[in-house]
Length: 214
Length: 373
Image (cartoon, rainbow over all chains, first blue to last red; front, side, top):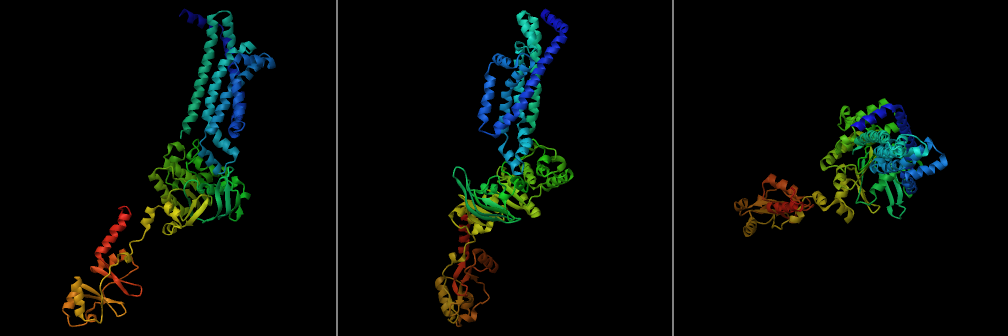
């Protein structure tokens, strides 16, 4: 109980600083994910449309995901220097795989009879993609986005090592100062961001899915 | 008008799906392509809207080679109904039906009128169904939408790829009836693929029966059933269906030999024959065996000293040998006679057919049909 009041007092006293860290954290994630969507969705569509390059696209995004996050950020730092933008690039790489893979699977999973019907009534390949395939793969894409976001929120916590800021700052200084309160003050908001992202995107996912139940 | 001239289709793996097909689809009629799986019926249909391209030969649509028509344009000019319905699950019924008119950029008002009219045509209230999603409809309703989606842009030709095969038997029958009924209003050239002979016979104006990439026989349902060209066609139509169509037993097969008497003979002779054979009637013939009439035992007994022609009843019924059992039964039951004389085309007396033989022939006929009477 005592600990909770202490934590409360700390949070209130440092609220502006904590809020700005939270904001930086969220921004990093949003930029990273937005980039990943911008690049990942077209890559996923390409992979689905051209079976030959699919293994190449999928395995290279897979490899990106397999590099340990600290190592990846360190390598990125060599080329992009310290700071916010390096972290955004790192998060972009990390959330790329779920988005590419889910877009790919989503388009592959569109019922063949539906695409045949679309083609048969005279849709151009572009119309087919815009009106049929992309809307129908949306539930999958949403699932990918959700997984990607949760990963990004977690990875963003090691931001301070490459000077990117965010809630990781609070946690890491808590570790070096051996301050339980500081650790919690960073960890709790970071977890909350992950939970909220998961819940909100999960609802979107369910919504897109519900209508398309066969 | 759609014509196929020497059309071949060979797939990349060397499989010859179609071999030198020559075919003309009848305009404003239901043309049914039928055959076992792998016979090329679906391929033939998909050539028409270029979902598949033929390897050689020509397909002419109103005299124009379809390879010179942009496939997208071509498809928009043809309705297409597919086997698994293929409605767009993320679009409302309205958007589904309006899909092609929207691609063709019709104005909104026209599209709305068209969609409502089509929904009414298949007895789905537009007010209720317009805003629903396909998943909220039954299978039969969904395929009705599939059919009217194909009609929306008012194409001359509609391609239907086993459209009713995924439905339950009751919905299937209903939709078949509705299609036949609808066709009377819309008069489209319909190319309909199926593997179900009952369906084909029910809806087709022209049946095109295929096997291994060849056309085995084409004609009206009646022509196929009454005159199958070979055993494959017979097998495909099915022995049961052939039997159902079989005519009634022919009288020639149940003819009985029966004595007769020449009209110039004395009545005494006639009585002798009747007593000997234990019969009460005797057919009378002329010298050249032409049928004359009939005498009965009672008249004969009261006219013992006369001649046969004096007591011959020339108004009694007889039947031609080429008639069937149904005809004979009708005459017999109308006249109350126990038998009928059988005559050749030249009125020669050949024998008789009696009640018992008729009944026997019917027994055999219905037994062949598996007891269905």
